[in-house]
Length: 377
Image (cartoon, rainbow, N blue to C red; front, side):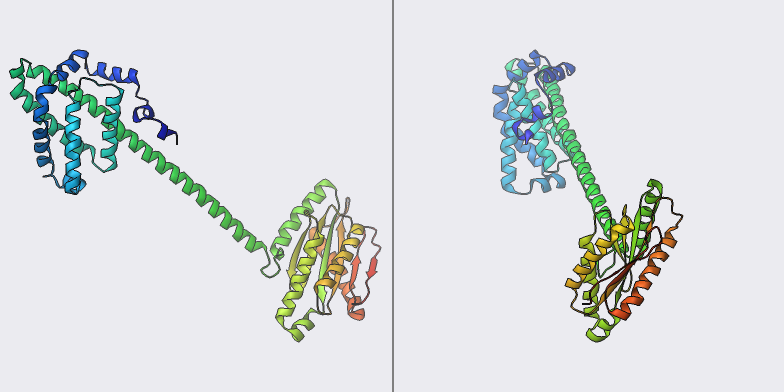
C-alpha cells in the first residue's frame, strides 16, 4: 500500500543527491547537458527515421518480434521510442527524468525483455543516433566527437537506472518467493502438526465413545501416578463394568449395545473435572482416574455417575464400580492399584448379579470396605 504513494525513485531511494552523485561518477557535467540540449532542434527532424530504422532491425529478432506481438503495439512503441530519443536531448536530467528511465526498466522487465536484449537494442539505437550526429553536427558548428561523448555518458546513466530497476524487481521477486516459501512451510508445518495431532488423537482415542483407549489409559495413569507419588498426594482409580450388556446386544442388537456404551461415556464425561480422565479399557469395561482425590471423596461421584447413566440408558443395565486409592506413604505400584480396583469391581459385580442393582465397592486406606447399594431400576 505504501508503494502506491511513492514514485519509483522514492521506492528505490534515488534522491537528488544520489542523482548528482551518479553524474559525478560518470563525469557527466553541466557542459554535457548543454551540449546535448543544443542538438535538439536539428536532431528532432531525424527522430522518426531513426526510430523506424531501429524497429526494422529489432523486429528481425524472433525474441523481440514475439514480445511486440502485433501492429498496434509496434505503433505505440514507435511513439514511445521517439519520445525517449527526444528526451536524451532535453538538457534536463532531474528526478522526473530518472523516474521515466526507471519506469522503462520496470516495463521491460515486466514484459520479459532480458538484459541482453535490452542492451542490444539500446546499443543499436545509440549507433543510429551517432550516425546522424556524425553527418549533421558540422552543419551547426558543433563537434560530433563532443556530442557523441556526452551522449554515451548519458546512455551509461540511463542504463544504470534501468538495470537498478531490473535488480530491484528481481530482489522483490526473490523476496516474494521467499515469503511464499516461508508461508507454505508455515502452513505445511501447521498441516503436519494438525495431522500429527489428529493421528495421535486417533491412536489414543476409542473410535466409538471418543474416550481414551487402553493404551492412552496406561500412559496417562503412569503420569498421574508418578506426580501423585512425587507430590505425596492422593489418587483414586475407579474400575467400572456394565452389567447385563451382553443381554442388550443379544436381544436388541449391537446398535443398542453401542448406544449404551456411548451413553455411559457421555455420563462419565459430564461428571469429571478437567484433571480427571475416562478411558474405555475394553469391551464394556471403563476406568476413571481421579488425581488429587481421596477414595472417600469418590463416593459422591459414583452416585452422580449412576444417576446420569440411568437417565441415558433405555435398557436394564447396571454398573459395577470398584475403587482403589494411592495415598501418601502407601507402597503400591501402578499395576497393583489397577488390580485392587479390578478386584473391588468384581466384588461389586457379584452382588450386582444377585440383585440386578448398581453397586460400588471402594477400598479406603484403612482397608475397611465401604459398600453402597442403589435402588433397582
